[in-house]
Image (cartoon, rainbow, N blue to C red; front, side, top):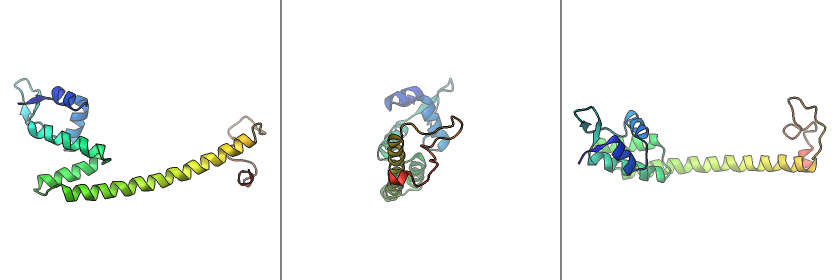
Length: 142
């Protein structure tokens, strides 16, 4: 049973524009068109979209998913490629977590300084002592 772009999009909670974007990335292709030119998708597109959504839910990026799907198209089972993509993504997430933890510490330090100095000398122009205190060592002594 062929699906129109709208039917397929609704089945996966996506917009038709998202499916067109997936087509441009090479993730999805219509199996044909109706006599009126409407894109038609078969069961393969349905299976592929299910895979794409599962991979996204696992945290994979569309570029990773495209790499995996290309491997499948070349006749390779996806599991080794999925494992590699998951390991790469986990490393990225861990790096980002470290960056966010450093940002959290810097924000906490600035906020502690701001709360300890609620009425700073401010010239009202383009600088703020909470962002760049006059005494760089002042924050570390808070």
